[in-house]
Amino acid sequence: MLIVMEHYATPENVKTVIAAIEAQGFTAQPIPGGDRVAIGVLGNHGYVDETPFRGLAGVRDFIHVTKPYKLVTRDFHPEDTVVEVGGVRVGWGEKPIVIAGPCAVESREQLFAAARVAKENGADMLRGGAFKPRTGPHTFQGLGFAGVELLREAKTQFGLPTVTEVMRIDQLDFVAQNVDCLQIGARNMQNFDLLKEAAKIKKPILLKRGMSATLEEFLAAAEYLVAGGNDQVILCERGIRTFERALRNTLDLAVVPYLKKVTHLPVIVDPSHAIGIRELIPVMSKASLVVGAAGVMIEMHPDPKCALCDGQQSLGPESFAKMMKDMEALKGAL
Image 1 (tube, helix red, strand yellow):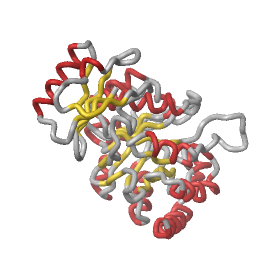
Image 2 (cartoon, one colour; image 1 turned 60 degrees about the horizontal axis):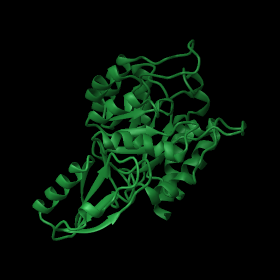
Image 3 (cartoon, helix red, strand yellow; image 1 turned 60 degrees about the vertical axis):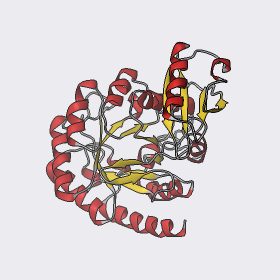
Image 4 (cartoon, one colour; image 1 turned 90 degrees about the vertical axis):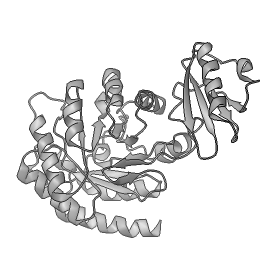
């Protein structure tokens, strides 16, 4: 349940309501707003009786929320959340951003070449996988902590905020010290221990939708992060697994306007992992902006045919440059 306070409610009124909530055995979550404070009632396993709170000073209204995720909904937080990553603002209504870079960090030369292309063509952030969750154990698994250090060097040289994936709890502190945004990938969307610990790290988190996850499960995973104390969360649609096999996955673009209705967290799209075919990435990137995405995440490699990971879905420098020009024209039209 959400208890909405009057705009003239005093801090003492708010404290009284919080004390009443806790006296009922629930957890109180104050949510400051532009005009008034709301207080979320958490920890309930069913309908919350509003009677004990009705006569309290400063209380205006009650909103019953039955969803398993609450803090990520607009019921609890009607204003858009803007996530700032190294000075780049990501949010509904902000300028759509582009995150670009190789699937995996392979070497200093490869990463710096990709970063140069990204910077020269107007990308906002640099992505690169240091730890790679691969389906087969004999494929390239990334450079690990050395790759994270290369991302830090690339940021210093090119000035682009960096994004990389964390796979284990013991990677969190080191990665957070060296990059600007932690990515939790599709395979770890429901790694609840990782989510709980990541929430304690005061860094922006990019959370990818699991390949077979419903939207309820996706938002519930985001709830772990917000409930754990970190509301700087970016959601990422990266395609879902369906019966169709012509493409790597099915890119579910309808979730972008749907999520815009139900959550204050920004949503970006990763067409590279969704589609898996290089030639289709530019058009689906533009389609992502048309449906309202806060940005896109693109795999781009300085020499895709030599890539150690996902070369078939990585754009080369020329195709990336053309896509960025087309997207700038589209942004103007939108």
